[in-house]
Length: 214
Image (cartoon, rainbow, N blue to C red; front, side, top):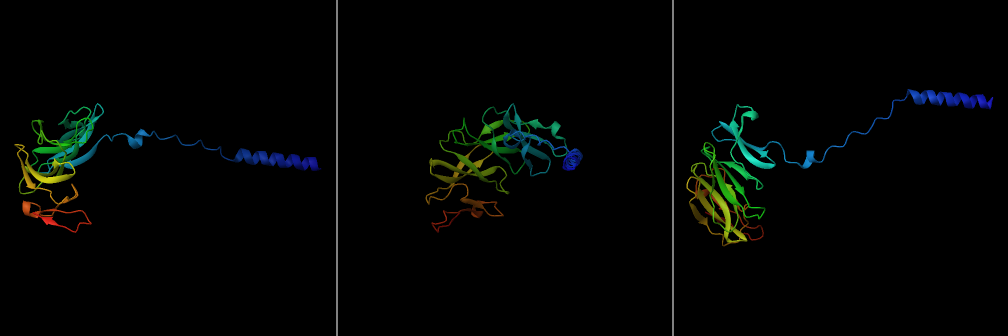
């Protein structure tokens, strides 16, 4: 009797096991390049006149700047730069939509120059050629479309001065010498109506309690 009961229990267990769905295989691993590889398209920006879209897309493994008409498919886009190795960074439109500004260093030396590429002729020009320091874009004033304000630590490697650069000619002028040891980059805060020197402020390190206006 006990043997028959044991046999019945075994049969029931086998039937129940057969009725259960098979254990699903684990999902495939996601390739790590999906997380860390350069995106196909990034940094898209519409031109101030609303006609064009600029974006960054790799060419042979190096990120470059492309442009297309706002209503064109991405397949119709054309490259404006053909950099190899050192990729353009910090893409910005000029206020008149004639140029795209960007910064670039050389072989990773972290000494960035300011460049402008013409949207029509694709000519790339170094606007800060000859500097020994590094430059970063601060703002582009609305009422001076051929001008860009930059932070430049050419005079003192530790602190950036505020300079203006004329985009069409690369003429550079010192706007405010940083004698107060104010933070670079974050220290230059354009106000909402930034259209002239009088509305750009240099904000100091938090524990200094100083504020220098132009």
